Image (cartoon, rainbow, N blue to C red; front, side, top):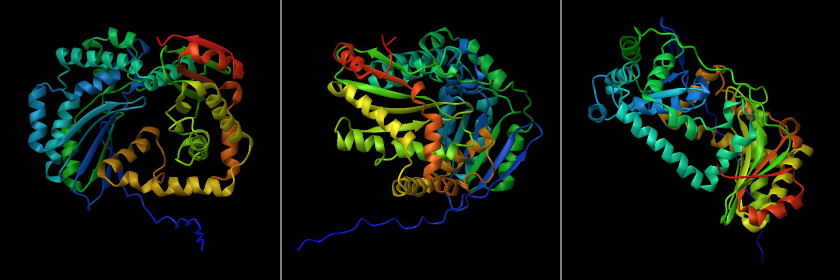
Length: 450
């Protein structure tokens, strides 16, 4: 007897309510965000500044990243060793990093160490050591990382894709951590100037999430940071422009046994009204395991171990990228199939059941990002940086669920213009060039990795 079993249907998502929070502004312009999580064991504090890569000049590209790295290497009264010992004594984790749209100094601690942790955090951002020897060490590490990245075909493809996607006047054509040329020319004085200019109180935000005593936290913030004064010029207004036209760029990497494929174009900003349809469309195309790119290129054709698509929305239009890695001998057909999936998502509405599965996945995994106090604190950052509405996370799942097949197709048609797609291949030109030219994908340009 043969037994047949139907695929189980998912249950409705459990209710989830993002934690309530309050917001207030200090006299110096700093905004305080308080998210009480009384059932947690830890407290996370994130201090945000408008001091990311968008705030730096192109001649100093990478200075924001190096400045952030240097903040955790000591203060005016503590060298790197003494600072590390102070954090270890309190059992707190301190970090500092930057992105295109902000920089962040943060720590995680038990509630009883919040006041002392805030004292260290304030010392770190207000009176950093910015030691020249530590700077040279971190600068050398960054330059070495760039060289290492260019030896890795995947990272090389990511870097070269941006370089050829945007025009020469668009900062997004390089990584936020800078280029070999810009990083190589940086000095400790550039870092000190960036810190003095952009790490200021007036545009800053401090987020506190966890099991804290409200009065103690507010008193500690006022004591450590309330008297801080300074005015930051903020970030540049970046207006991304594509290099233009459908192109096929082949980055020659002799001896490669695989080809890295990148296809895309400038996407949307973080505050674009089409954000939720764009998220669902991208997931449908390549954001979940059962996405169209993965099913076609991996499951049906066996060209790759995986294919995906991603949006990188920023204050301005960051890149939309579809990517995969394939064996050299299927480079041209794999790229053709990838492009066919982009055409398909533009040309026809997704079946309701397929879109339902994608939305169910996005809705189902949504609460997982808030399991830790650090996750909740990080979730508050886009509200601060992009001025999203206070009910953004409360309505997030409903906004995803409301996306229709017609809306998903419409954003694909608007965003994925076939005449503007950049197709980039990193591989052995001697083995793939003829097939790529024969495929008629677009004008072919062969370039070196550099």
